[in-house]
Image 1 (tube, rainbow, N blue to C red):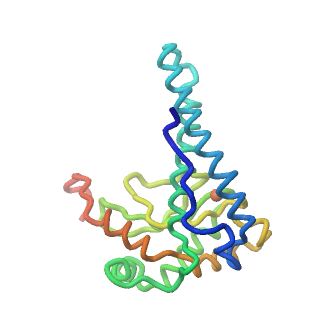
Image 2: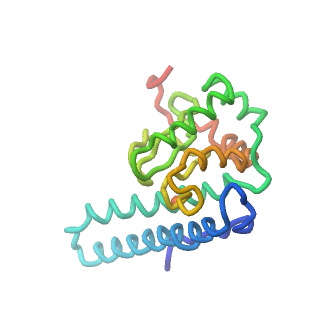
Length: 209
Ligand SMILES: [Fe+2]
């Protein structure tokens, strides 16, 4: 029985136009994201077989594959929900206040996240994460889907910086794509995610001020 499933989009492929073309959304969801779901399920199956055979000779490669595919699945599932055809603007309430506290103001946060995406070398993501140890928001540059992470951080907003996310429409002008996405952010979704993680206690007393 497969563990992971490809979630449906909550909007039509073409509904994020002109910022993201329908063709990109269709390929991105139905081919790329689906591939990570398939890869994660296949790797889980191979781990089951390795335990059955008591043969762990390929365990290192399987752990790498699971990390890659499962992280790809998580990040894409989150990215789709972070976007909405009626998005954009800026958040108020507790999320708006936390962005102001941790980045100075919304425009500085916007600039930092866009730069985080633009300066990725190769494939990766820019993310806004809640860091529970220090109790603050941070931006994070994720290489591929799984590397360069600070442990404990929980992504609440992610921006796909892989070429498959924009190349059909924007070619090498990736910063134009990163700017266009600011018309699509679903701040209601991000604020709900922030609410659900902001009180998380990781029980590491004395490890942060
Ligand atoms: Fe992607």
